[in-house]
Image (cartoon, rainbow, N blue to C red; front, side):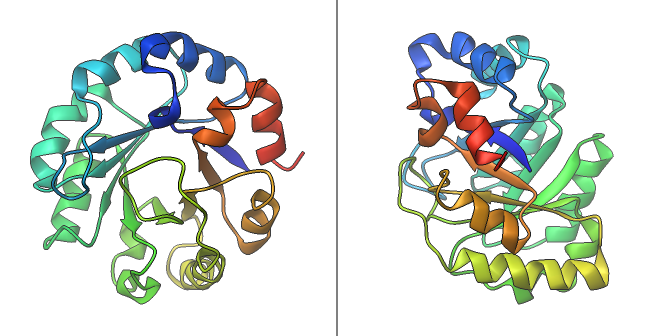
Amino acid sequence: MKIAPSILSADFGNLADDVKKVSEAGADLIHCDVMDGHFVPNMTMGPMILEAVKNATDVPLDIHFMVENIPFFIDMYKHLKPEFISFHIEEEKHINRVIQKIRSEGIRPAVVLNPATPVCLLEYIVADVDMVLLMSVNPGFGGQKFIPSVLDKIKELRELAQRKNPKLLIEVDGGVNDKNAPLLKEAGADILVAGSFIFKHPDYKEAIRKLKCE
């Protein structure tokens, strides 16, 4: 199991320090939520903030776009060379084109499903992406309660991936903690995004260890 601390829950007054601390504590990715105030009712960090994050760590960035006009944002953030850029299929009409655009920049493409979006919509694109992010809360704000139905979605997605893309990574984001982490692992998740559980824990290393189910 890999862990991607979500900096949405970090202390923005000491962001570089928090990023360094979770990196040293064993983070596998640094999850960065980019929101535009249109696709979701919140606004977060621009490219200058993520440049500072990148400069504070050697851990790869995992950028999650919750935005309209996705190609515009890809161009704005591509110079950061994150490991992944993920975008919501609910927003994009030309999904394959955007996947190709991300991959052409040397970045691994990923798509995101909101809690109520069915897995079957991935049937014809799952072979073209490196990762699928399943939201286990409705996106826009940190600290929300985990939606248990994502466990069935993980299992369904894993079955689809076995047929069409066995190397697909499944990431889960929203309300992740040490109680549901074992269930997510058993269902077939590969990467867990956690914000509040890690950044509100007195010991980042211990929080990450618990999420890895070690």
